[in-house]
Amino acid sequence: MATWTWFHRLASPPHVYAFAQRWTPWFGGFAAVAMLIALYGGLVLAPEDYQQKDAFRMVYVHAPTAWLSLMIYTTMAVAAAVGLIWRMKVAHAAAAACAPVGAWFTVAALGTGMLWGKPMWGAYWVWDPRLTAELVLLFLYFGYMGLRAGIEDPAKADKASAVLAVVGVINVPIIKFSVEWWNSLHQTPTVMQMGKPKMDGDMLWPLLLMFVGFALYFVTVLLIRLRAELLRRERNASWVREVVA
Amino acid sequence: MNEFFEMGGYGKYLWPAFVLGFGIVVLNLVLALNSLAAARKDARRRMEISQ
Image 1 (tube, chains in turn purple, red):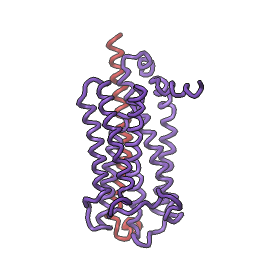
Image 2 (tube, chains in turn green, yellow):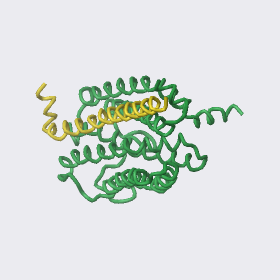
Image 3 (cartoon, helix red, strand yellow):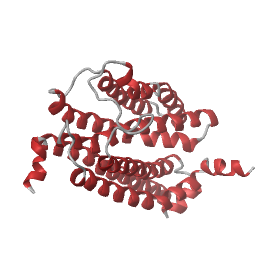
């Protein structure tokens, strides 16, 4: 029975709201510290790459933003699926909270990638499998948000957008494995691969720390947006009166 | 110091990328906080009307 207690609490908006309020500063604080140390490690301490020279330092902003764009979509799809299967309102709210953040980080991944592509490949944009699939990810986020905005009844918007989020998750492995399945201009994974990372330790730790920082940051932003979503959805509930009083 | 900002000639691509990436990091925190503040304000207004 104890196993189900946490699941029931997860379904209770006031409980989730209080949890989010309590933990946001912690996640945010650790995210900021991790990112700042990683920035110093990546831009100052790490040696230059033997092939890409200093341009390789792009990895410290491009890889975490690109990884986050995929992780946020996956989180959104899982939350949407939980919302569909267990009819859990909090899960639908979490999925809705993910979308704008994910769209912004897809823009960040595409933009930083273009700025890395120009000096390395000679072009800002090529219709390469990975780049194209990442662009499709941006359109999926737009589609999800557009669909929600277009349906007035919140319950119907939750259901329809959740189906889109779940179906669209097929694009995540396509992006991840595009560099292995097809002849891509994009380099293959350096860290997220089976076995040992193909990177020196002095370059690797700032990157791994940056991933940790971005993950904590995403939790921070998600918790803040989730609180906003819950307040809007439950505006007539008595617990909302208590927390805003 | 100048050498650091030049980044071996790649500075003109590197720094805009970092500004864009971390600019979006800061922006999303601000947008989320604004969204929460707006939702709280709306909930408070509803409470006052209903009283």
